[in-house]
Length: 216
Image 1 (cartoon, rainbow, N blue to C red):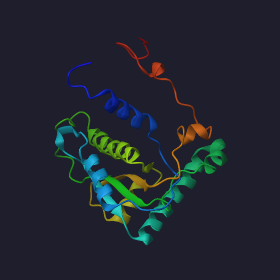
Image 2: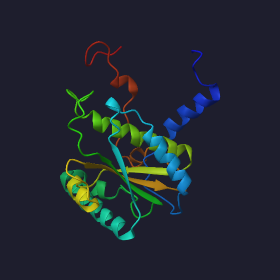
Image 3: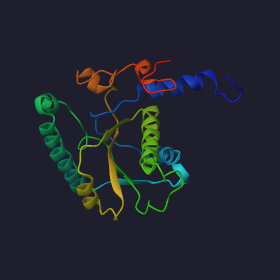
């Protein structure tokens, strides 16, 4: 412990929100107050970004017909994913994978256009812009959980189709459809675990020492 550490209570709250974050698919309608949404987006905006390029762009979806169009794109990809899963197709189709029509707020997170000149931290790892956007989404997720709101990250869509729907400029790319809003309850464990889709692996299996595959 160092002099820069937060108090025991503050640290406990931080670890709790990390542990209790859930990818939510069930929402109870309601609304998100404008000042709360602004606070959540500010938390996202405070994420680290390579070269301070801040590649994230958030589009708030307010028109009901646009929300319906996004839902159709998600549903199209859900069906294609089910076909690609083969023998697990029927099992997948029983899962609830999004809450696009049910959530109070719908956002789309996208990578900005004109990223090519940003070489600071990206010369050998160009995907660091995506890593930076992912950090912003995680900030939004944790802040939402701390505020008692559910959030779900939907990735079942064709990025080009969604980009066309939202008028994204050349070079920009839609990465996430974000469902946000009040929920009846948070899942006690990740929903895919509760549904028997997959079991998480213990950390010990994923930490190596000096060389790949060598356990500490």
